[in-house]
Length: 212
Image (tube, rainbow, N blue to C red):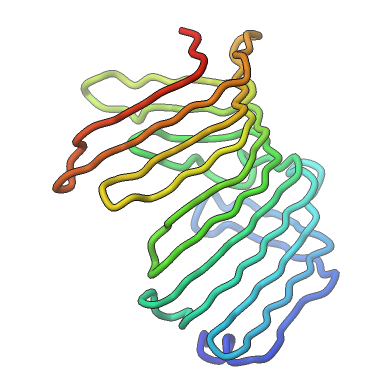
């Protein structure tokens, strides 16, 4: 099927309504309207443009653009660039909490613009801006230390995450954080995570403003 799909010159849906049932999750039924989707194939280049309106309980709108060079069925030699944007998207209704380094991350609602770059199947870079409300960081239950959680009422700012040969680095600019009616001053934060032989070798962190 994939060979046929990516050999067509152009495929598309215009102003369509789609009902989706999440069979792999909680079985939720979702409905999307004004769905527009166009897939263009030209040799080893494949481009996808998609947009849709969300129902009132899910937010306003989503946009997705994908530009891929290489064989979609193989990771080697393939480069993929992705742009995704959303307006007042209720992510908590669309997606289950996602785990990151032993921490479940969930977001109630967010507006965002994100650019991502993959090469050879590996994520190289993510950058963009976000304005989110209800960010919950929940450490997964373990014997030691005990589980704990952190709820941020508001998170906003520009960010850049980049993969490195020995780990990764994160930079945030004009970051705004609010918790329990207290808001940080706009700040810059940098984090460098260093690995060696598959283990954590070091973490470097800096911030222009920190309220403890």
